[in-house]
Image (cartoon, rainbow, N blue to C red; front, side, top):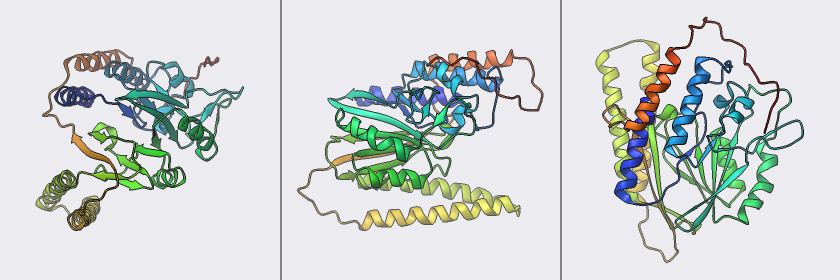
Length: 338
């Protein structure tokens, strides 16, 4: 959890240096490491509540619900009301939304609508039902379009669903994903939306800077993109060299080496495309952006206030009685209060 204190320190550093307003968003799976069911009084649940307190202190603007987040049940999440949840999917027995479908934020004179989508989780109470994004998004986006200049979708869906959302709904301008795939996935454009993914488990801080988001055509800073891609390739080269130097013949190591080499090849193709891209100027106005994935390494200074909250959380967890190896059944509260 030291990544949280380092993340907030980097956010503070960036904010002080650039003196620009920003939105702090989470695309899901923040509270639990997996979707394995846990009890509401387990150490995992204590950790989740502690992370929620830290998120509150960090000042998150919106957080999506991923499949892992429901490990202790959706009522457990609903009781963690110090996190600004957004989710379009979940309804109680009266067909009332359990979480807000979206929130509106004003930043630098731009009204931004932020919504959240996810796949149907395994741990869902019998009297709570899930509605798919194909049903929910069309009317909600029509509603958001009337109120907002810019629409962001926080997504814990598969990459094919994220691309489909961008293709079907041109008013969606940004899809931020919580995928568990490679941490080196580069930002891409589908229709009028940018799709971006940072590393899983907080290994990176994704920093997206958008200049004047009113225009439908996107343009990246090509020089900065090249620098970032080359840095990622250098990082992959380092991992490849470590594997080769160990001279390990284990099948898992060979598979990892193959994946790294394949990823390096794809990134090299992106570098080549950027270098040969037509740089001719155009009169069409664009929304310019830069994207940076900042590694949250142990060398980054920790934010003292968040560090203390992390230490407090660890202390609370250490005081819990030791649990047996078998996973306890989830403990759902008998009465749900939306």
